[in-house]
Image: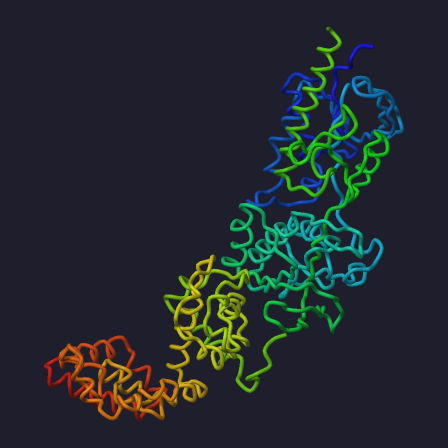
Length: 355
Length: 228
């Protein structure tokens, strides 16, 4: 049987876009499948600006998006899902289904899964911090929606908040919830948003309640120090135990551990820094391609720390947050690496075939 | 939880003092931000003996916690020995320097707690500001320094003789640490006056201030200096 020359990339977020463009640039024809009607993934869909430089997301990603849309070697299928797979490396027969329910079977030689993450739902099992009870308790994602409008108000009364608190590690680093991992980006995003709150509401007091601030590499001074020194954001080590209503405000209870005192302070707006979980698409691709999961439920890779993209299934690679919490830098880097591995794999199969 | 001490003091008074500290030209150079690593406390000799933390000073100012700032302005700042071991701060903060500024604001405003903290130092302030020297040999009395052992008594009994045994003639003194030349004193007086250091004492101890001012005016007049 002839080796299929095409590469299937599943998911058109930063990792999938980079993987598709890189493979196509290397001369491999790519089928890029995206369940949504737009490409750009979670950052473009939900985030007004990106860490660490606070560029507007559309502006930052427009080159990446245009490159894929215009690439002659990329066959882009929007509103399309992978629903079934037969065959194996070199000869995958993948069934795609569009929104109308129309199915086609495509033959591809290798696959890159870039189906990403979903944000932790703070009411999924246990109600956390009254997210579904109080209008003024929102998530990082809800805050981004406000930043897109440029208007920051308390959802309860439409007034600008005077006191804003972030609660870190919601749905992360928690054995009780079953998510023992750090989601990597929430400290940076909260710091970015704290800066943005202060830019829009200079009189507001902004607090970030944290366990450890995890500000990798240049995020340390570009976001953390900047928020603290230039914008006077208050970082308080101690996680809030509960949020209760007091009058028309919210009272948050916790411990200011480094000052050694309990604390009960009123807030107007509470932002939950929700972490990352494997997306429904990621879990579905694990099932369809028979991909083992690592201990946290993300897609397992075999060669870490030196190979971050090869799954235990020959010919199937993973890029981005489908393999665990990732920032955009890591996702894009993985996308490029997955493309190189997948194209190399297809080339080796072809060489073996001709010998 | 905000500090609940000094609740009788109106918030605007606390804010006014806080703004004075922040307005000091050194402030921005002494405070960046604090990530609470604790290196300043680890290096601080006072922290080993008192309930005192240079970290909390920096943290409080960085957080702009006015209530806690006021508490520290009254209670904590006098536990610092101003050794500046805390300047190893990786964020380049200077907690000791912040305390210097806070002390100056406390003194300038004549806070009651500051008067109490410095009450025992009247004689020392007088001595330093009028002579430029601090501890003098005749202060080394057996009852004042029992921890120095029996030798203190022997030295105190024949102090003038012991002092004359020291080679430099300028140390043949008992009431001062060393001989301070008139011109040196006059220069010091000029510095105290022109930097406003003398005026700082006015709120703290009016009587002491007036006495020192008289001493200085007279000496400067004799020396032919004009401070106007």
